[in-house]
Image (cartoon, rainbow, N blue to C red; front, side, top):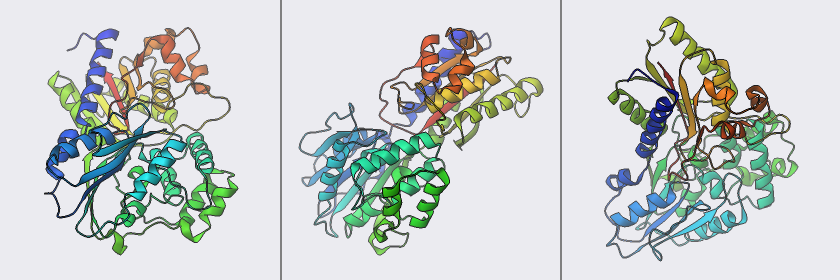
Length: 424
């Protein structure tokens, strides 16, 4: 296809996003990873935006196993029961933890008591689990964790920095969930939403040893300039140290990445090539400030348009990862993907082409909107100053006024950000 219009380009990019999301749903990938039923119990524990679909797949596989039970925690509104009485489903808040998440996590931890070496624990971990599975260290309250989460979301902290802090302030993260399950065998099935697919970083690594230290977490707190005395005091306590790689309690842990950002990008690239469009994956682990990433991507697009470097047109540029947004001053309805897109369109306003930026879980920032899609014409379609909207972290409102939002509802997975730039 070569005769693109604004409408046909937006439809094409939405199609690619759909293909990426479908490739990131874990249900079909789980069964080949499941072992035969053990002599003892099968206990399913998990949390995240893909938790319910993953639980359904496990339950279907072990339909005849009499000693299957468990509990998974998912986001409010996504808690359809896989099968009442077998694997319970609890709902909690994301991205800021709530009392429901605290109660559900305590219930989950209680299920680990009395496990023996003949038992099998299947841990189903996906994006969002860090907020959904909340169990503060002794001496901390839910209010302390909420205050920390809100501060982190506004600080511009990277996902690695956030998880470093979370691992040292929790009774479930940083290897502690797997340690609580010892001496049972633990099979951790992970949907990655982090750059690099590091199991110790996904959902703050509840089943994996943590090489960082409480001192590292203290350094992150200081670098971000967060004045949280109760958090600082907790990090100084001996209980803040996480479970380390090589701990004997982790000796029977086996883990698999079920879905990842790279899988999503490859699915979109394959769909683009099937439509006759050359597709190039620039990376699945791009990080940094969302608006700066948008401007950087505009610079790459400019080189393609003007120099046919590093790729000749027509082509599609794909990228994934997780950018951040540092809130400075009053903020509107933001979102890192739409902030990326608005910055890109402003910097590339004189170039041909269209772009889409969205979160694969269907929720970008605090809005129930995946992202947005369109070209430079959007800059004049909202009836307001796009630069002002970007400066005020109000990109969602801007794209809503322009009629360019991408609304999917909950997708049942999360492999982080998806960005596609079509250069005709």
